[in-house]
Amino acid sequence: MEAKDGQAWLGTNGYGSRREEDGVCHDDSATPVRANTVDELHSLQRKPQVVEDRHRLQLQSISASLASMTCGIGPKLVNGDPARKKEMAGKAVTHHQHHITVPTITVSDSDLKFTHVLYNLSPSELYEHAIKYEKGSFITSSGALATLSGAKTGRSPRDKRVVKDETTDDLWWGKGSPNIEMDEQTFLINRERAVDYLNSLDKVFVNDQFLNWDPNNRIKVRIISARAYHSLFMHNMCIRPTYEELENFGEPDFTIYNAGQFPCNRYTHYMTSSTSIDLNLKRREMVILGTQYAGEMKKGLFSVMHYLMPKKQILSLHSGCNMGRGGDVALFFGLSGTGKTTLSTDRNRILIGDDEHCWSDNGISNIEGGCYAKCIDLSQEKEPDIWDAIKFGTVLENVVFDEHSREVDYTEKSVTENTRAAYPIEYIANAKIPCVGPHPKNVILLACDAFGVLPPVSKLSHAQTMYHFISGYTALVAGTEDGIKEPQATFSACFGAAFIMLHPTRYAAMLADKMNKHGATGWLVNTGWIGGSYGVGERISLAYTRKIIDAIHSGELLATSYKKTDVFGLDIPTKVEGVPSELLEPINTWEDKDSYKLTLLKLADLFKRNFKVFANYKKGGVSDLADEIAAAGPNF
Ligand SMILES: Nc1ncnc2c1ncn2[C@@H]1O[C@H](COP(=O)(O)OP(=O)(O)OP(=O)(O)O)[C@@H](O)[C@H]1O
Ligand SMILES: O=C([O-])CC(=O)C(=O)O
Ligand SMILES: [Ca+2]
Ligand SMILES: [Mn+2]
Image (tube, rainbow, N blue to C red; front, side, top):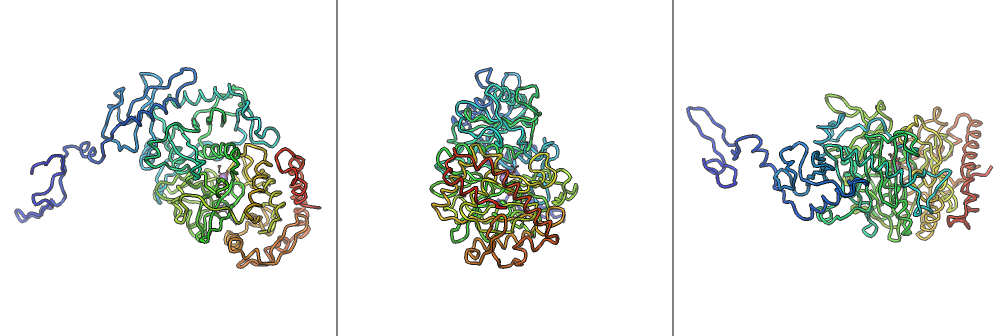
């Protein structure tokens, strides 16, 4: 048989044939190919890569990002891959191993050592890197990439620092604020430490992606990291650029240097541990040292949006969001673990996003391109859509699985209670792409009340909505923030004090204004305990909470009759379709009524004391509302 230029060999009849010789049947129906070795055969799998000017510009841009502050110019670039030494020829070469959409670039500070830059790799490539090089990375039975985040399995809010300079006067500083100051010089020391670390590696991953589905307010982000896990996580969580968008990406608006495997130097000023997450708004950069928990990148960028968006009169929100078939949009506010992801992911509705949104004059837009679901006790029966999203491409953090079958045991907490799945939003079957929607009709405040005294649902007046939004009460569920081992009552302004950059009243004023203007109704939903506090009672079933949420969406709860509670003065419905009526009033489910009353007063007192600092705050623009809002809290 003859080879025909560049064509695979075909059988004599062009299709392969069956011949009978010596009474033996030879099956040569398989089409032979022109290759003498496995390597040659392998090379036929790939399409040739063309190195274009634009790719050269991208390399230059990445080189500038990775430049040491003290050395001036950025590291030298060559194409290559650490596993393919022969390509380290010291110059840009056209090579056939890679498809054009996944250029592999090499960067170095010295001519002697090269650091390979792996630019916007695909999930398949990132899987291969993770499995080959990162201990604890495995493919689970459903196809997800199981990985370990190391010693930190939750965020470290006490290690967050924000550079204080002339541009950050309007930030929220001081008591209660998440913004712990650092100076520019110290930031540069940590930045240099991260850049030196990254440049010392054989390879780094670079993601160029977008945040915010609102095309007028989109920002370009670059994430430089050392692990395929981090790159795949951000691939899933940020908005993925199309080929054309990537070609025209240009310079990023914000850059993350994730050197999480490497600690900060505790002798450095402002450092109180070996972990540091440093935000510099003027330089538009973030440095991560001493934690590999990927949520730091996600929430670090969220903080940036909480700074940039309000400057444009756009409200940034720690909320989930979904939409009914009729176009009615609901927001789900709540702290970590209260149910934003679980309840916004709803078979009967269209998912706009599970965690971070913007509310502009044009409506709602998701900031992210993916979802980040808690996995503890996940079941196919209770959360079928999240279950189905855990497949090839999904990052599964810190889960425990069977060594042989690779079946995940979602009840296992031995690594952490904060097990997580990060998947692209289109893995949810009824996601809305692009992730935007009209102005919300319902604003649902979720609280996971470990005291068990808040009603499962109440309708809020305007002032009550503001009061509870500013209070941001919940019982923090174990594990999401480092060091918290069991549920405890907590207040977090705007249901996200760890991420907001301005004073809470600034966001509250914007929310009040938007809800007024667009006629949205506020609700308080307790997804926490009934029948007693944590330890005595139990968490309300997800099935009941879903019924309550259904009744809010359908309008059923607007039409029903209400009863006012003591102390908190909440309006509770007397009937909700599918939920036992006695459950709607907490005192009914408590055996020990005296204990209920004491607990109610205890919680009310905690609310009161927490709100004091806000009640007197006049700077934020809600001053005329302040008295009314303060009065909307508990009275006793
Ligand atoms: N009645 C309930 N309502 C909502 N969630 C419940 C309920 N009972 C149990 N859960 C569980 O509580 C958890 C809610 O977590 P979810 O991922 O929705 O939190 P989140 O608000 O999105 O937090 P984060 O901001 O950290 O992502 C899930 O594990 C869910 O299964
Ligand atoms: O940031 C995280 O680790 C998870 C999350 O969504 C939150 O805490 O709100
Ligand atoms: Ca979530
Ligand atoms: Mn969140």
